[in-house]
Length: 114
Length: 110
Image (cartoon, rainbow over all chains, first blue to last red):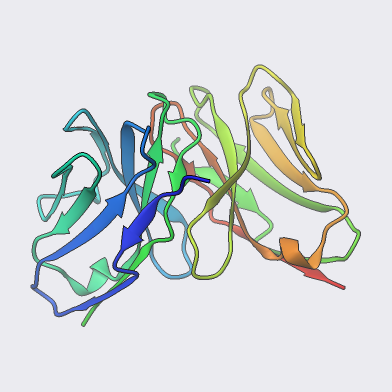
């Protein structure tokens, strides 16, 4: 069964450093998403992406965040200058539906900022 | 208006029992209501979803009941099993972003 994959599973970084989280969406999906989940809290939407453009972003997704589809398979989330409060699980999701129905999530990357 | 309220926060059910988790929303523009199951250290897994044109959807032991006038929807897990022990999130959307509830931690004891 096709699945969304994410690397790394755990990333530890120092405050102020840049990190890139990588995702490989399901191959025939065209709609991509990033969500985050602070420990013990609900899952929060960050950004949606289609056709090399951001479709929608939340207020969390400020100028320190960016997304990119550098090739035909990867989808990345870059955090330019990490803060302690960026520590969270980051989930990538993908869908084949333009309305965002049936979003399939990856296993997540745990980001720890020290 | 964009919030989805979920209850209870935690639920303990005996094996074979029925687990019921409730969600309520305010935004009448929401048109898609999925439920996700999440095991510790894993990503949310899509369990079942409903559109507001039907009042109930059943898949195996999992049923969504939807009350459009009350702006509420619920997940029923029949014949609950220890393997169902996980955190369950309801969500809603009317664009492509999912708005999640706060989650319910379900524990099913043998």
